Every structure is written in structure tokens, then in C-alpha cells.
Length: 460
Image 1: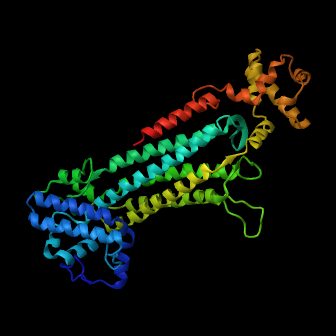
Image 2: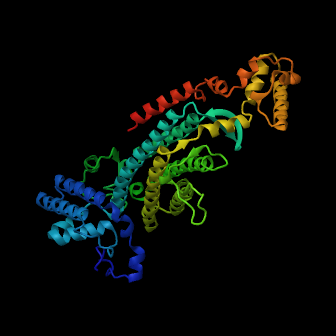
Image 3: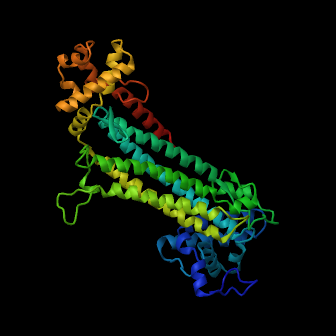
């Protein structure tokens, strides 16, 4: 097949080189964006008198027909074409003749591919943000259900202080709200048009870049033509936001793996989001959570791959940059899959409140409250801390818990103890007293839930 760029050379390359050079298997998914951008470009060219209106009309009609045929499947994408841009232009020229050859006036594939990528990622970011909101809503709904369910809170994976399951789930909602903001910020910075930068130096034609940008929904234009065709930091910024999002999903997945184990038995996952073992009939494996955790490394790899591609490139466009789309497209695809399955898994998950409470009691996570009780009786905190530690050691030796000790036993460790100690170490009271903003009391968790619901409703 004769290359569209034949001229300086005869355009003949080896089959191996053609395959190596081709990107259509990756960028073919951008056909809608490519056609939309070309239609805006043709309209601008006619409006500025750069091409006749009749040619623009033929181009627009031809592009509309190509789009319709691609979407219906009547026109398969030719895998032997170099890229989606050349494919569309080639089909257009075959269908409408020489008018189709005028479409590429005052633009280059360099600014064309940058335009298509920004248009495509704008849609992907919007789609991912909607998926994040669905997951955040599922977590918030689950937190509402379990806002009073007591469980151990952990540091160093050691039982630390009592919290509620709703409080734990809301921590991940707050992370997701920040992920929404990161992606929104990245999308805003990305939303400037590179079209009209041409190969690298702009053009001698009297184009109207602002009108073309406005027609495509951009907020402005790239102000430097070298930067416009060679910049891919918008891809890197999106990849960075997606990697952070995946880190949050991975942490949540790790919790689910632990919580659903027999050792914890805090949650029961739906059969719809677990698998069995080929030889062990008792198994119910949290494979979806494990896969999300594993796919996090894949998205990290996509980010590192593009950072590495871009790190040594001189201005302006270099063929290395063709590698941008495979990384960022793969990350978008992976993130959407992970968000969807996590939302389903969370929505169908049930908490085992009895196991959570039992773990909270056996973990002596009310020991800090015991120390605070003694401080209230006038003891210095370090003295109260030591006494409380001695009492915990006694409970462990005797196989009991703080709530079950007799007042006589308490007074053997310190004479300040009275009946009020049982109120101090009651788990429900331990939780309900933590009324500070952001804390684990039911009232505080309800405030967090209201905050999250408002933020999700207001998120664009």
C-alpha cells in the first residue's frame, strides 16, 4: 500500500518495519475522536476561506458516512494502515476524491494525534470519575448500615482502639473523594487544544485555532506549538492519578482479603464475587480483591513506562511518543474493570458484627480508655498507663477481659478504682465518647456520611 507520506522517499518499507511502525491496533479505538476533530478542522478551514465551502461540505458528509459505517461495523478498520488518522483520510479520499486530500491542510499528524488523545482521555476520565462515584456511594451506603458495628481498629496490624465498621469504610470514601479531585484537576489542565500547532512550528495559513478549540469543547489552546505537539505530561498526570486510585483500591482489597479470612471472619463476601478451589471444597477465595490488588502493579507499570519514554526526548515530536497511548489506554481499561468489580463486591458484602465485637473485646483495645479513666482520678498519664498495662497482663494470664474483672481485682492494682470503671471500659461507651470531628462515634460517622453524600452530589 502506498504511504500517504510518500514523496521525499518512495514510501516503501519492509513488512517487518510496517508492522513495527504501525499503531492502528492501539489507536484504532480513537476513530470517533479522529473524525470529530477532522470535522471541526474542515469547518474551520472553510470558515477562514482556506478551502472552498463545497469541499468542506463534501468532507463533512464523507466523514459522517465513515463514522456511521465504522460504528455499524460495515467498515472494518484496516490493520495494515499505519494509524487511525491515515486510515480515515485514506477512506475519505477514496470516497470523495481530491476534496478529501484538502482535509490535512494546516495540520500535521503530530498535532492531530495530540488532539485525538486529549479528546479520548477527556471521555475516559469522565467515565472513570462516574465509576469512582458509584464505588464511593456503595461504601457510604454500607457505612450507613454498619455505622454502630464495633470492631478493632489497627495499627501495625495489631488491635489498637475500638472503632466502628462504618468509620473504617468511610476512610476509603474520603480517599476516593480525593481521587475524584485529582482526576478533575488533571482533566482541566488537559483541556487545551493542540490542533494548529502542526508539525512543530505552526502554519502560514490564516487559521482560527480558538474557534476550532471552542468547537471541540476545549477551554483554550496550547500557547506554544513546540509544547503542543511534544507534551505528554497530561497523560502522565492522568496515569499518576490512576496509580494513586489503584493504590487506594489495593489497600481496600487487602482489608477485604484479611476481613474475609477465617482468622478474622469480619465480613462475608457474596458467592458472585468469590471463587472456589479445584481440590479443596471448603474454600471461598476472595479472588476479585486479590486481582484488584495485583492489577495495581500493572497500572504502576504503565505510569513508569511513560515516564521512562518521555524522560530523554528533545523537542519536538519523536516517534517514541507513539508509546504513550498503549500505557494510558491500558491503565484506563484496567481501572474501569477494577472499579466495577469492587463496587459489586462491596455492595453485596455483609459484616459479621459478632466476630468483630468479639475481636474487639479480646484485643484489650479499651486499655487506653482505662488509662484515661485513671487520669480522670488524678493519676499522671504515665502512671495510669503503667497500671493499665499491668492489668492487661493479668487478664492475658488469667484468660479474661477488662470488662469481666471484679472491682476487688481492679483495686489490687490501684485504690482509685470504683464502679465507674465498667462504664469506662464498655466498648459502646468507648466508641460513643469519641465525638471529635472525624472520630468513630456514631454521630461523627453520620457527619462523615452526610459530607460524602453532599460531595458526591456536587461532583461534576
